[in-house]
Length: 400
Image 1 (tube, helix red, strand yellow):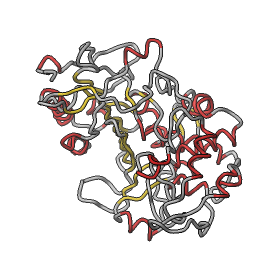
Image 2 (cartoon, rainbow, N blue to C red; image 1 turned 90 degrees about the vertical axis):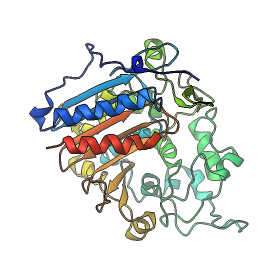
Image 3 (tube, helix red, strand yellow; image 1 turned 135 degrees about the horizontal axis):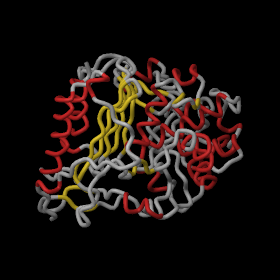
Image 4 (cartoon, rainbow, N blue to C red; image 1 turned 90 degrees about the horizontal axis):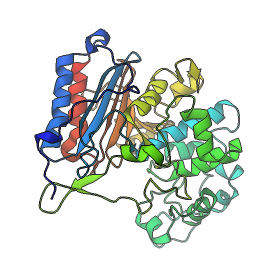
């Protein structure tokens, strides 16, 4: 057990790389309410529910809140700062989706194209939708849009099927991953159900085929570089290692203990460069990505997506019957984001979108108030005591 007291609450550290932060009131954010958000994060640190966190709120393209509390590592006592790095896991998906849609805007593919047009392995996929059933051909081909909307029939890396068949190994490069995932049966016919899956890693392989570049190279040159997301990487090396936060979870007997959630750490380059879960980022970096989406595909004079595409990918793309089966209130956008389609009682605005990561990161964009929120911890479970909902509820009250 590692004790953590008041000394673990570290004030925000200013560095030369800090984004310009304006007075909250100048962008219609209540500073007193935002202080409550900081106090919430500090309380979670004091109560040993998280080791630390970094959070940011932007409105109308200006950052009005950027705070860090706690520490990156309980052993070294390295304080959290705006430069701290976090494993963002599934928030990688949104970046991968944008990479694909850049190529869509260039005419490299159509959304209704069968994936087998570019990855022949998909021509042989079969469906086993009930235990013990004989594998059969799907009712229709898996399309690129199915991959983006998670209606492909593929499953998640943590599913019993994929674990049994060894579908996802970070020792395999993308072509081998595609071979393995297509050798496993689909869980249902394409375009019949939303099933969160490894489809976005398949999409990373498609980016390679469409662009002629390695997936990570394409992200670097066409997404991360243009957006000046210099700390968003697949491999943490050099001086970045000292800024990578440790993942913590409840320790036996109380307190927090380090959690190893990957056999191959992010400080070693795996063979598998995953579009679904592979990136490390910082709060200021991801806030730039979120702002690009909020600004219709452009940021600081750099346009990544056409305005039409940028609007389309953050609106619900699920068919009515699939949306209803998913619960009815939240749809899914091509940008690999949840989209609120009807009020859900949380106070969120219809049209709000965002997504999270399994190690404690999350973002929300609210087009109606021109607000972007990013919250990052390194925690397993990802959302102890509903920290995300509590933090967001406070920030919503701060918006005037």
